[in-house]
Image (cartoon, rainbow, N blue to C red; front, side, top):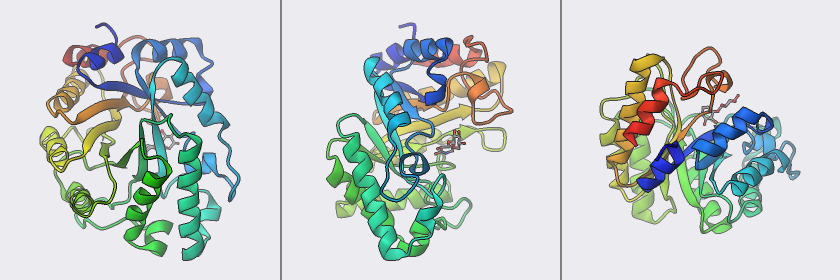
Length: 302
Ligand code: XIL
């Protein structure tokens, strides 16, 4: 195969990209997306502030634009993300516990119902754990007012809203075995033991010199898979350039392919110029949509 999506499909995986609705009108952007990728994740358009900027009033048009584009191209869609402390509108943080619980469940239900049948996997909860060695939950309106149970409640509400979507927990700095990934692992193991609905764990995989691809990346993906969930690489980007960057990308792809329950890889953008890492070059295409050495390494690893 000579595209990322086709090569991944031969291995039974998807290969996706984060997409911004406002770039879809750029011919080269759309052409590269349509040619190379078999899955999309809206980069910002399905976050709470975009979908429910004020309580009970939903604005789906930008996200619908991406879903419509994906459908037209036969691509699957990852939903990102229902419950997250960031890009959360101010009104949510101001609610008391009882209202917050109602608002959280309503947000999940309304959004998942709107997209029922159109989303392959949902990031139900994003980034609920702290960095560092504590293994503790991150402070957020949900954590602070509803306690640890908010994650379980979000997953149960999500299953009730769309029983066909895969329900994922997604986080960063959980890519290798460390205190943070151990805490997520313990939660997932507990959910599986108690029948709390969870189908997948997303590993964001934002790598840079301070946070390089861990040597135990594959082993970490495998230990989660062994709990009985799928694993997905959800927001991959790797700071760097040239052959060093290419080698890292190849290692990530090989790690996923070595884990049978690693079902797909998403890179967090298409050309470097639109990366959220504004000063860096962490993606597979340069600013003119030329394939970088990292692209060649991914394609040959697939
Ligand atoms: C980022 C987007 O790429 C930016 O455009 C936005 O300004 C901030 O969010 N973890 C996540 C993603 O789960 O949603 C974040 O996306 C990157 C880190």
